[in-house]
Image (cartoon, rainbow, N blue to C red; front, top):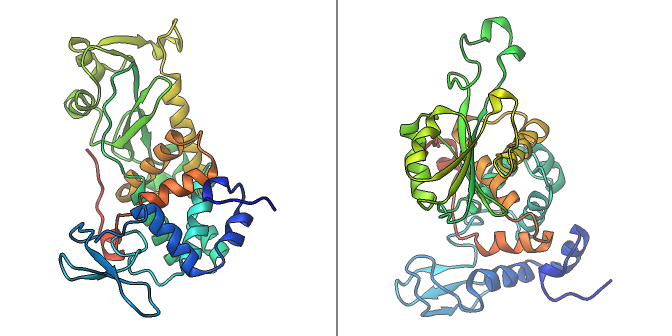
Amino acid sequence: MKQFDTIRNFDSLYELVIYFDSENKCEEHLAKLRWNGEPECPTCCSKNVKMLNGKRKQFKCYGCSRKFSVKTGSIFHDSKLPLLKWFIGIYLFTSHKRGISSHQLAKNLKISQKSAWHMLHRIREVFKVEAPFFDKPVEIDETYVGGKEKNKHSNKKIKNAQGRSTKSKVPVLGIMERDGKVYALPVVNTTSAAILPIITNTVKEGIKVYTDEWRAYNALNKKYQRGVVQHSAGEYVRGDIHTNHIENFWSHFKRTIIGTYFKISDWHLASYVNEASFRYNNRVMSEGSRFDVTLANSNKTLSWNELVRRKAQRA
């Protein structure tokens, strides 16, 4: 087997499992990525800390007098699962192009489906990022997530729910920089009043934006150089005017739902959108690098009560 010093050199789950042969090794790697060799209190951010003696690797902060470990204040907080199971779960989740279901992960890790579901949502918290600011040409489009009326039993069908109706579907707005990253989020509706503030806050005024002919985008004409593709007339490309990149992203996102998750609730849709965005924005990374990025940004928490009480999040 080839020699490796960091996880970025791993190219298989087998190498990961062989390398992390103890809980201590897992903790050391996590500490290196979270703190870069200098422990920091997750409560007050003080670096005036000291390692305590004992079997458990704990630290004491002399700023707020609290004790903590490398897991405190992270997605691993209060988890009884060993870090190796977490590491395997993160590697599987971030390396699979269409994610992994909680049922499959439960089988792989030999844990309950409930624990696997909570683990996956904790990992998705890492993928939640602040809205970016685009200063290059972007494509803007929206999609709708929800069951098709034709696939429902007659007594469950909702009238006039076709097309852009939000009676049984949730709209998701997407903004993608040409040859760059994507930003997507669920919205209340796709009216100009709902989507224009999001666009103006994330897209620099005066640059080129490419959209379809949806009337809500007409308000963009005042602040941007807008190129419009007429989908209703069977037009999909006219020179450099198209929304093919963002539509390709929607295609991958929908296939992930259909092929892996099957059904997702409105309450958690934002988390799945963040997951899809993370996969797209980091698609050129190696599997080991995506694993490392996830660990390095794992300083977020999500308790079980917070997860199950979560309400639908829409901008």
